[in-house]
Length: 109
Image (cartoon, rainbow, N blue to C red; front, side, top):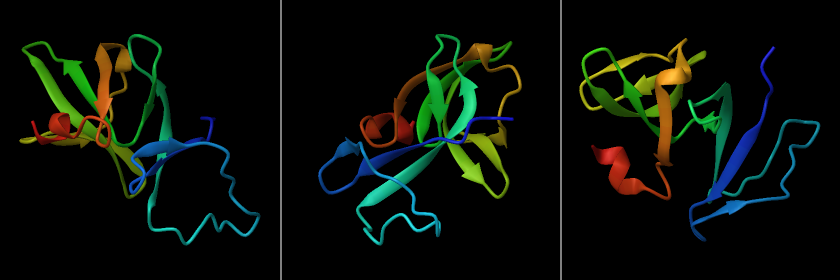
């Protein structure tokens, strides 16, 4: 079973938020400034945890491709400019190179 974890970004302050908690009711906050990103349960080839919103570079047999990790329906997907597919089973070829908030220029490749 994968570990359920989140990280939180404050859009207004442009920084990561520490010390938040989810109430028993499941309510976190009505604060629209907060963006919650779920942990995929996987780490990249360097051991860095992969969260939704991360920008990753993946080596295929032909080339390196860059895309963003998104949660869609019931699974994580890797989405690029011209492709979208279910998240890699072999994430040892994946490297987190940034995220959509701190490295916005990467998410537009």
